[in-house]
Image (tube, rainbow, N blue to C red; front, side, top):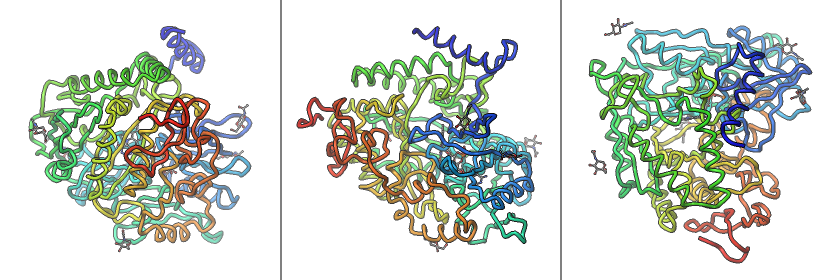
Length: 586
Ligand SMILES: Cc1cc2nc3c(=O)[nH]c(=O)nc-3n(C[C@H](O)[C@H](O)[C@H](O)COP(=O)(O)OP(=O)(O)OC[C@H]3O[C@@H](n4cnc5c(N)ncnc54)[C@H](O)[C@@H]3O)c2cc1C
Ligand SMILES: *[C@@H]1O[C@H](CO)[C@@H](O)[C@H](O)[C@H]1NC(C)=O
Ligand SMILES: *[C@@H]1O[C@H](CO)[C@@H](O)[C@H](O)[C@H]1NC(C)=O
Ligand SMILES: *[C@@H]1O[C@H](CO)[C@@H](O)[C@H](O)[C@H]1NC(C)=O
Ligand SMILES: *[C@@H]1O[C@H](CO)[C@@H](O)[C@H](O)[C@H]1NC(C)=O
Ligand SMILES: *[C@@H]1O[C@H](CO)[C@@H](O)[C@H](O)[C@H]1NC(C)=O
């Protein structure tokens, strides 16, 4: 079937959903919770697939619009002994954290999609208090209207305030309070179960100096439902950004200085291209000339045709095990990014040259595809279009260990650089900085985060080109260097023994027990992540990171993928392609 007909197929589906041609719908992301008449709902994440590829069921969903409605929902659940999970309008978390338990139990999803009407700015005290469901973009724009700025935010804006802090989401900075949003939280309100005499649920207001805040600001939805978040602000400012596309020599020696010199600096490393892109990103006064915007290429409203053909090209290269083809793709993508400054623009329209100067609210975060108004454009990963489909590994290192990790990855790269083209055709290795935090599930020391994306097959049993390399880097990060997994990303294996990586994990558990003694907000899915326990291994479990292989059958021997030691980190166990089980191919 050619692309034209596939596209027609999508348009047809859209028209069918709309009911008639006159109501053709645009393609913003689909709502995450879908329910049917017989009762019963399914929760999906933004990529439309959980790590285990199984559906997440809930018996019911409710959409409180006020704090009191939210309290009543929690009370109802407590009174009726329902398992509860909170989910935002976006559901952009990749692990199954928001999934409320197995099908047999009565469960309730509380969506914050409508809990979004209040944004109160206290100009004198430089603070904003927002309902937990407020979308990040709305919050930022409202704050900037007052000529104030929120200093930290993730690079993607399609998130709710409550969701962002709950998983420790971050941008990049070692300055001031740092790049993680929760470190700018100076108060929050939490709805928790209560005794019958208290009406089955109550609202707790946690202020800046309350020790509970260290448990509540990164709490994975496990303490209760956050109704309001209070963030500290700064006087409005602008930033000046230049991307330096250069070689990757000494990247490991440069990176700490880079973070110290540039308030919002980051680095993108493309190992196969031997290229590092240093982002020089500094605060400048509000009266500096410039009206730049961040319209990051990966988050642009993308032609569905392009997303589909990129996916089709990737699939063809996978099928042919054509690493060099991936290298051509990586080179093309990188060349294009350099040409258009990764999508950053000097004004609303176009990139004309460095530096890009603009307001904080326009430069920190982006997400144009969220607002698609056309039937033929969407986010490139929209699950309805057979577009991009990938994994996201995000490892958070104590700063002093990162240098050796980079050296190890370079060793692995030098064995066969083209093995890294598959990662470079996405975003390479994005390196960001997070400052030490008092949050129990945050980073207790200054840290460096690395993110990399890589191809995921349509089918869980299909092995992927060079998957051994991503697996080796993944195991190196989490087990050799003890990196912590980002709570909102990663495959299951990354969470193995995660609790031992947090010195204050027991303090978090104590707070959880205090707030939610009946474990109403816990499920087998969130337990799996929080406790990082190893489950039984099954045939093919390592292909999608559900386990680390220890036998060939955990890979795919019938397709020539066998369980082998890592090449640079020999303790790693990875699924590698080879013509026969006895020969290992580099
Ligand atoms: C394209 C993309 C780009 C991303 N970019 C970044 C990035 O640059 N930096 C980064 O750090 N992360 C990034 N992320 C991850 C993202 O920040 C997190 O997944 C974030 O938690 C999602 O927020 P959400 O509003 O969608 O929350 P959801 O996914 O709906 O929920 C997240 C978790 O928080 C809980 N929760 C949500 N709301 C509440 C509430 N009101 N009270 C209690 N618990 C609640 C849920 O139960 C769940 O456990 C990205 C993800 C995607 C898909
Ligand atoms: C309705 O949803 C339930 C729960 O998700 C599911 O098991 C059932 O198959 C669905 N029924 C229909 C008719 O879609
Ligand atoms: C689902 O929740 C709503 C409240 O949001 C309630 O009115 C309805 O009765 C519930 N349905 C079931 C089947 O429990
Ligand atoms: C913000 O600053 C601009 C430019 O200095 C000014 O015109 C505007 O009135 C200010 N807005 C507020 C709410 O202070
Ligand atoms: C780019 O980075 C390299 C390596 O740090 C440095 O040598 C070079 O001077 C930088 N170029 C610019 C224009 O800043
Ligand atoms: C653990 O929490 C206590 C109390 O808040 C704090 O004093 C200590 O520094 C924390 N330890 C770590 C490693 O974060």
